[in-house]
Length: 398
Image (spheres, rainbow, N blue to C red):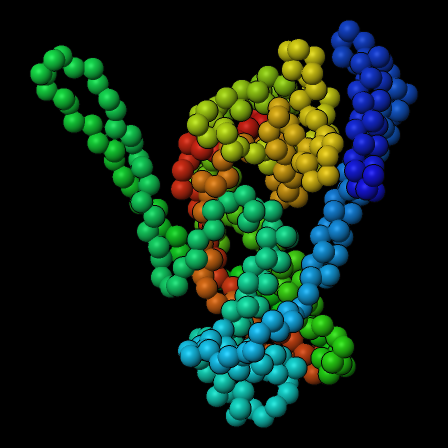
């Protein structure tokens, strides 16, 4: 039995004990003594800690698999020169020149000649195609919404997306009667490209050390910083110099349920699920803050079954009402007027990636401390294009 599976089973057993303890020590008014509450919270915290440990182990296992992948393939036949060869940012010449620029190697004029096809408007250089794919993959690992939402790639300018504003209908008619016209009405949503940037500092010594994996370091730092900014904007963005988030009051998910009080109830979460049309519920997912799960773990449905269920198998997610449960630190906590739960088909939220992430080496900015700065930028936008596929739960205001 793998260690991860063993940990998952241990977490499930701990949760079963916590549920049994809760059922046994809760009085008819749903209240426990202070001592019993402390005991239950210790058991619940163990479930949370085991969940975090499982996530760390799964990430480590994934990284091990990636590190064990071969970096090159043996020649199975005589190599032949390609009649066309890779051009532009996909060429080996551009890739070599880009990393020479990062490490400050080779002559400046040689670098300029090779990199001129990838110069951006701000003096930086677009990263090679192969490395851009690495950055996109790293972003998906840091920003969970990139694995849930629809990703489109744009070249330049705003992109107009046609959306159905209203649907046509069918009618019953008499034999040889006139069939009434009923057409779909279409609208448009515009997706642009907002700039997000970060400054990455590396010491001169590390840059000159050929053993130091500068490619992996920049990719991980770029993904960690940009991914966090993206995830926050895709949820809470106001659309001003940043994407329009899922919780935007006007262009985000509509309110499916408003709670009757300050606390969440099982019926309200069930009502949230049914506020989304059944055609979208097939691929729907819950998104909420990790702290909100604590309030939900104690909730039961009408049959006495707990709404939250831990994933038992390796790679299996936790579920809420049998729907996948995803957490984000950028979702609001349960508070008056907040929207702590999103539910729906997240593929209805489109993320527009502008092709060409760029880096600029800044030699002088941190020279006094023996460091080199790298300005990393990308352009991205996000919009909910099908509002009826997503709903949120809002807590009653104070």
